[in-house]
Structure formats: structure tokens, C-alpha cells
Image (cartoon, rainbow, N blue to C red; front, side, top):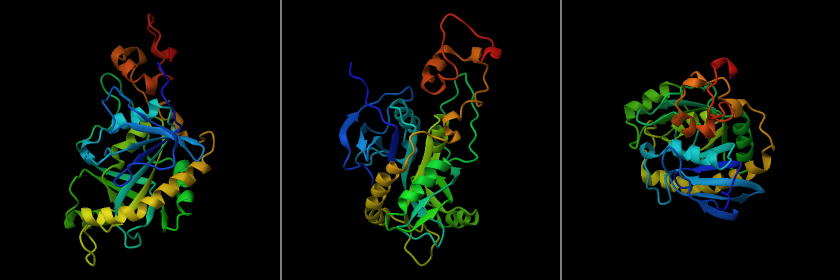
Length: 302
């Protein structure tokens, strides 16, 4: 059996970004995971000298709504291909006057308002509490910001991404209250991606493409699919250019704490984890909990 293609950088494309041109030796890879199938097949190839795995979050043809996205399968599948750094591209509404439609934002915080989405790989006999005070990787976000500044767009470094359940846009009352909370952009896909990326020990960063002013801005038309689509089309080239630029800036090795996020996060006694769960999560926990059939270890041996 041929070896599965590998990549070190993953890109999850949001609305409007369903492919990246210019990938060399590109191969479509179908990946199955213990959490089901990812949104689509994953395109693995070389871009700017870096092995990249690209996955359209909503599927080709945009068939999957934000609530229906199998984020666990998406992140797990990319991890299984060797991905260590994960860049998310996401359409967002601006909650700030100074963040104009067509601006780019690289947020550093998230406020999660989703309610219907599985948000952890763990459970079924094993508990882990990863730190999420800084939901985005500072190193990767900084490089993404640097790369985006060469696109000719106005770039905003930092800010809070408010993630709502959707698929409907906000009411005016919701939008006004969200502004009072101090958030900067609003979207529907950063969560649970960021949570799962941290559990999978991936560096995670978002390139947010501002398309509208949501519905709080009285001097503009309320956000609509037509408005979002039109501005997305204008921003996609900037997003693709940013992705190519950031790949040339990545250092060979990671120097951030993302790669060891699980080191002290698993609280379940190792000898109490059900074998089936251990096997299911081996990709994530194997380096901390190597399976040795025929022997049960005491807690003090781990």
C-alpha cells in the first residue's frame, strides 16, 4: 500500500476559498477518522517550497453549514497527515468602525457563543483540560500578520473574534450587545476549531476577511449573502497571497508551547483509560500514553 502523502502546514479555507492554485504535485487525499469524515478530500502538495494540506471547510460547492461542519474530523485528519501548523481563513463581519469591509484581521482572542458543536476530542473514559487563555498561537499569528501586510490591504493585528452558532446572521439587538462586549469581528467557524487545534497540539491562527459591518452600522445595508460574496471575491486574492507569503516566513521548528499542550493536561489515571478510547486517541495521546499490551502501569510510572 502506498504511503499517505504528508504535510507540515494545514490550511482550512472558509467561504469563497475552495482551492489554492499553484500547488505542485498536488494529490487529492481521502482521510477517514474515528470522528467521521472531514468536510471534503484534502489536497496535499507543495506551495512556496512547503508541504501543505488544504481542506475546504464547507466542502467544495459550499454544502456544509457552520453547525454541520465536522471540526473534529477536519482537525484530526490534518493532524494525521503530519500537520503541525494550521491556518484558518474565515469571512467575518466587522464590529468596529475602524475595521472596514475588505480589511484583513489576525485576531488574538475568541469569544465562543456556539452551543450545538462537539468541542473536544476527549471523553469516553479520558479527561483532559488544555489551557486556552491564548487560543491562537502567538508565533504563527505574528507571522501571518507580517505576511498579510504585503498584500495592499489594511491589516489589523489582534482583536477578539466572536463566534456565533449561525447559520442566521445576528439581530440588530444582538449585534449592538456584542459591540458593548468589546469584540472586534464576528463569524461562525473559529470554534470549536481553535479548541480542537489546541488539543491536537497544533499551532492555530486565523486570517479573517472583513466583508461587512454586520447589522449594527445604521449607515450601511444589513449584512446579506450577496454583500458577503461580493466582498469575499475581492479579498480572496489577498488571502491567497498572504498564505504564500507566510509559508516563506515559517521557521523549521516550532518554538511555542502549542506542541506540548497535552503534556500536563490529561487528568485521568493512565491505567483507567478504556483500551478502545486509548486506541481511538492514539494520534493525540500516544506520546504521553504509549500502549504496551499485556502490562498495566501504575499512575506513578507515567
